[in-house]
Image 1 (tube, rainbow, N blue to C red):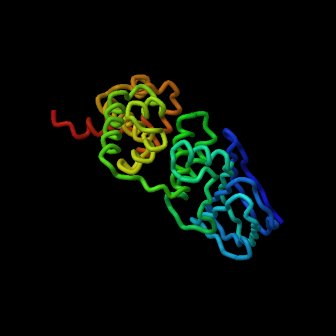
Image 2 (image 1 turned 90 degrees about the horizontal axis):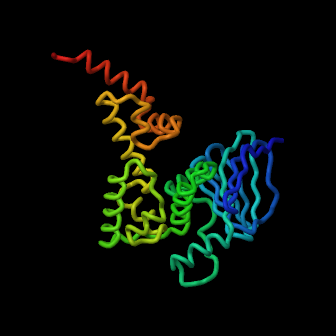
Image 3 (image 1 turned 45 degrees about the vertical axis):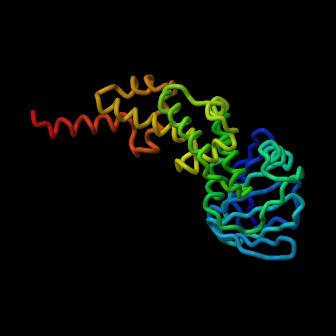
Length: 272
């Protein structure tokens, strides 16, 4: 028998866990919060309100509060991440944004789902929740809630103009880390609608888009012969490891290695 929670942490009352299970089970039980899980690998057999189903890698399980459920894990290890979302937290967001006519906590579409956008949102939120960046956490929380609520983003002209203003601001302020509150105020949207509409139109949420702009500028500076350390400082990366990790994640190479390779190629192909 083997059931192991390798991580369990909480941010603002929202708990996240990462579990590896093998030859074990959860007996029938219920939660007083929403439980949303992304199955990373393996096959889990679940029972929910009298019905059985299999959950494979890439699938999602969604349980509303008070739903009776159980799980069983075979010889093959199953790994999954879960987000435990209090009813009051989701209800507060829904009420603030006027997303539902009822004042009660929403009932989510539950069971075993195949939804890549929601799967990615769960994984991103669980990963970001470990960080100390409050704006990044809030952005991923808003994206997760939008995917959970299956809230359709209206492609209206006002939203397009707001996103255009956000893009202009982000391009003009590469050094300063953007704050969602300030960005939403500039755009005339709530943070929820800003993140949702920006992601729909640009394919990236605003904070990630801003990081891409910074890294593009970093490449320009490195190509021009600016030292990686000076490049990081010029773009507001006061934590060198943050700059290195961000650059490597996008380019697959460290800034120092990139600068050396660019310099080497320039010398090799010089026609002077």
